[in-house]
Length: 417
Image (cartoon, rainbow, N blue to C red; front, side, top):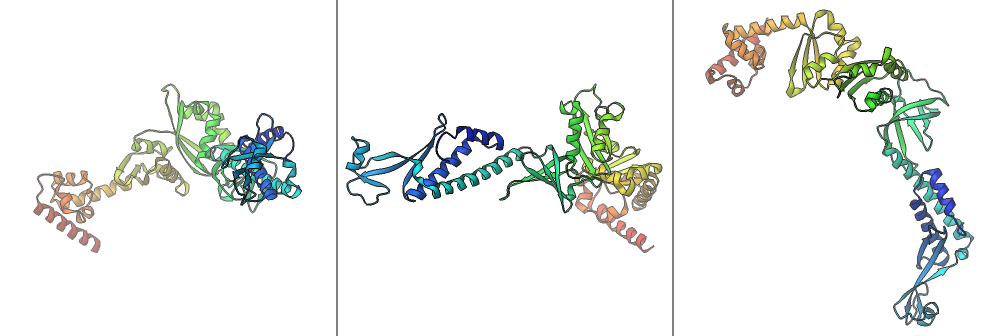
């Protein structure tokens, strides 16, 4: 295996396995060095060179010229040295070429095993580097086998796994089927890189739209976010950098052709496409469609929204099993509480009436408390006196103390009733 031109072999392996040529050369040089030391001894000073032009491997052993030889593996006399270089002096290091045919069958077999193992490692490394850079992409593959509900997929240069939990509930693949999936993770393992795929991840949906909608791939339309309950329903938010391009219409396509292609891939998953708006209050109105929204009350510090809808739209806004509001919450990235208008107005009136009672029908003070977040007697009863004092310069410490004490009494009385 060491004799002759191996240039064509290296180039072919590099092409077939996707391994860098320099990595293969290093592997062969290391294996050759190991074989030489098995024959000549572990202490010898060996250097191996691969000539990229000729494709030949050359091995050189180095010894130091000394007055008295104490280690024959590393030293020789001046007389022996001058056979190689007539001008050499004591202390010079001289190299001489070794016939690699002399390594012997056992050493050559050992080198072969090293090369095979090193090439396997290099191949694993090449696959890992190839796929770690593709993490977050969609890939196509062929179903190779199904093991304990996990699907093993052939990606050409390697295998990947689609775990059961990452499959769409309506998926029903069999061996030989073509399959699309999202590269969720790429892990290094002694057995080789472990490529984990997903068909339930929101990014899988986004990538599918990128393939179906030219305006998305061109960057005119941007998908801001996506929320899914895989196989059932999803929501995506979109915007356009061109005022003449309708982002929702672009994603839907003529007669719904584009979105339907994505729906088919997702096993009938219903997809709501909504326009993204920077204002979270306006955005949540789009996200809860087709429900109409009457009012949105925002608590920015806690990223919480109270959304008020007409009574007839309550069930639509919430959705079956709470799905619509759940997906909207994920899409907007705020906690959302949906209330019907009638109940909200009733509660609002009761809370405001309690503030009027607290302030002895001082509407100005009641409005002041309400506007600053103290929307009911309950809120005032647990208020921080210093914070309450800051809402208006006309308030004094005694007034604030009396408000809190009176609110606590009213609250206690209401609880007892």
